[in-house]
Length: 558
Image 1 (tube, rainbow, N blue to C red):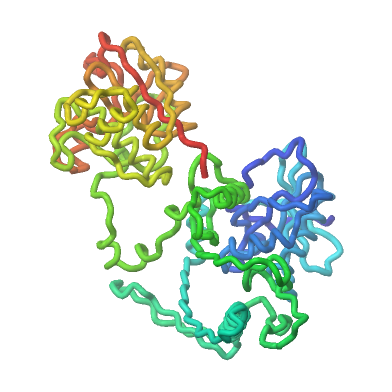
Image 2 (cartoon, rainbow, N blue to C red):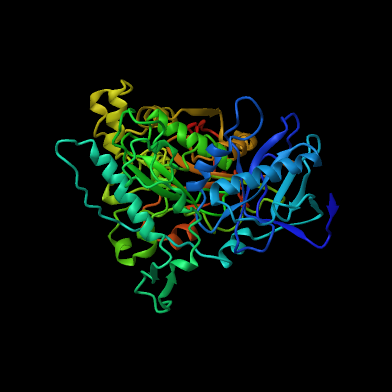
């Protein structure tokens, strides 16, 4: 293997596990790049999830079927990463080239990256094969990790969403209804052939008419497009050939897994586009809508996608509610018509620092809505602070797509406590205060969320819990309710210096009674950092009251 110090690999990200100690040798990741990026640029690492049963080798046909729809046009497989020593780079290159041929067809020969990750050190090393006929690999010693990867990606390209509804007239014999499937496939193939015709002309123009800076329409001819698949090699269903085997066609045309005689299902497939955290480019997923999202097969599909993309298994990131909504992005008129909450969200963003020197800030992750006294014209001043804290917590679970239920009203919260037997029927409609235990009952009943409760004998002991609270925000990242005496607050984070013990609490105060004016809320200290004892010696947490801290646990679901 020759060394070429004049070339470099540009990494826009790194694979999730950097140490493969104890791993079996084999292909672990596909390297994704783009022809619009500089050569040897890696935009993402997608995990290999299909392997042959008799070996550690990847099941390339299955991998190609997944990646064909998952990776958007404009991005492509540019290499593979294997665990082991430098000798495994050749296997990585060969696997990547075979996968490229399955995905893009012949005639797509270009430099391919073979990366290896050492068993013991976890060090990444890169090699490049210039062409399919190249006998040797060049070692690339220069590796650059881009600092602002998102800026790099979107300065080199943009996201173009194309949707083309097509109506197909179908004619079939009433005497033989089974012909409808054959007619449908034939009509679909005919449309595909016309769209891929080199003589086809496409007109691209912006849909944002309100913009003052409208790009002129662009005309693209079929000759300029690379459709990859050679339709001349596909046997047309129009040929009346009884021996034709429909299962030989790629799933990119229509899904069929076996020969004639298999039952036909009415599948309702729809594509969705996602931009999950940590992935620089969007992905496309086809979901079967005939069943609900909690149906086990759908859950397993999402779990498999989480594995491939390196996403955590304890939060829904690829549900339909997470999908990109192009109607909101491109149609300004539609945005104003969308139904949604007018509550303030994420009011802690941009507030002044805590004043803790050398501390580590641990915060709630994800959006929430700020519920407080007198909101929606309901007068709960003096007794409803815990209800408001609960509403804020439930809004977090809604906005993270763990649930689709509406945020309950005070009466609905009270009714829930009556239904589970915690309160008498007379409790509904009352102004009775509730605490952390009641909140845990409601979260369990309405959302199926379990909670951890921390008991503190005095407000003076709360700083001693900062380390535990920091771990909560780092691992669970849900809002916390603090109840003491007849007061309740929502905790959004802590700033903790482990060496000195100095700490501060990021408090969202539900006792606010004013309008939803962000500047007024922040300047008034209704959302801000609070120390147990401020600079004037005043105690924020009362020393003669015990406190309960409710720590909702993030459900393990996808």
